[in-house]
Length: 268
Image (tube, rainbow, N blue to C red; front, side, top):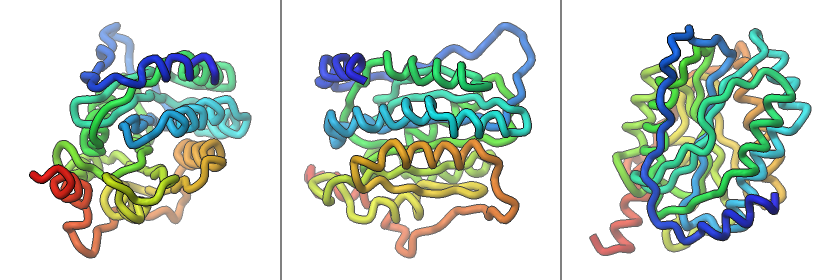
């Protein structure tokens, strides 16, 4: 963890990062079949302090090292998943840290964890969950795998305040059969650009799909276990009684809370 914390601190002042998409595979090889194609979309906006960014990345690293995760992958119908990991902040700040990788057991899962551990973390302004969802959809369409399920996994500590409305992005993804789950980070009390009850916001405005869920993180000690629990649920086949989830806020304006707060604070 120390190796990449050094890279994190060195790049902490970065202000913008343009989307960096891996090129679609053009080898002509047929798409590989996997149980799930999983996009991990991780918030690196300035509202996340350096300690939280380190804990967040380490949560994914430790999850992919765990035997429980290896067993969950092996127990799938095909015994393999495809995963990609990118970091995001505002609508023009998105960076693919690890392009698509097929994981078919402990060795490839641990290798994925090591690659995350070696990569630096960048930071950016604003919060565009809608932009993260849109990039997640684009990456799924470029994955060159045939997946029984397609999932976008959003982790972050704030409401959408940049780009198009989050519900528009969510609904377009849902219409394509893509599920979206949420990992809201709720370590601080609502402040200057934060909202209360972020887990309720994620439930009403972000997640969608068969068996979609939200797992909030309220203590630093929960990062690893919550991240592992989330990944296990996403990798495991949806239970027979799972229902399609697309909750709507009682007040539609609640899904524009982040945008309204930004206008109020910035005076425009």
